[in-house]
Length: 330
Image (cartoon, rainbow, N blue to C red; front, side):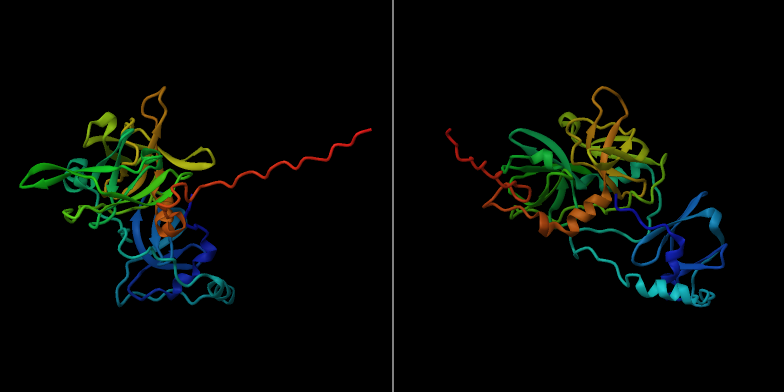
């Protein structure tokens, strides 16, 4: 999984942060300058501009909330300057306009409040062979679902429940284009191209890395075709290995039809894409961490779908033919 660095020795580049940022003073007389996203009993999550750091609470002496009068960070030593010089100066930014990923964690709210606010962004994805779920990344109709939901299909439709005057108005969009595919991460990027399509409600992408095991999460999707179904649970683990990839495990009920739908935190941010469950048990659902999703979206050109070659980008070359050895007769 793409995890933020938590090595304290590499944090000296934070001395270059602006004076109004927060200052976290550590036991070894070092300091980190950034924006405190979350304070928990055992850790503090800090945005330092190019990455998000998780700092053990046991290493923190004091937190000085930033303003124009805040004390400057301690002057870095010669060794710290060398580390700062070798560190990257800026992070790779997501391509603008495709999705929203806030730097600061939003306030926590109840599932009922969040469902009323963001439920419209979760859709049902239909193909001739089945159905799944998905969610809009932006108002222009770009949406995420699982690869296995649309595998082998090009005739795709999306059902959206628009909220109008307190009522739900179901609308089916049939001009849905495949933008990018990643079979091995089980992700697909689609776009609604209907000429009469409105501006769609979308949801932001959060971070699974800053979540803690035991935090509450909820899923919205269409299990067995029952659209707009909401299930709630906790994050059971963040590192369940399957097939060489790490998945989020949750007790939120996941069933066929939930595939491709979002797993939310209580800030209304997507932290994963639900894609499978253990069929012989209960409360054993799994989701693709949102860090994989961001990587897929940021590098979507490499996974671009081609109408001329529907097998891209995961086609395989034909194996070389076996060269026959000349027969030697005695």
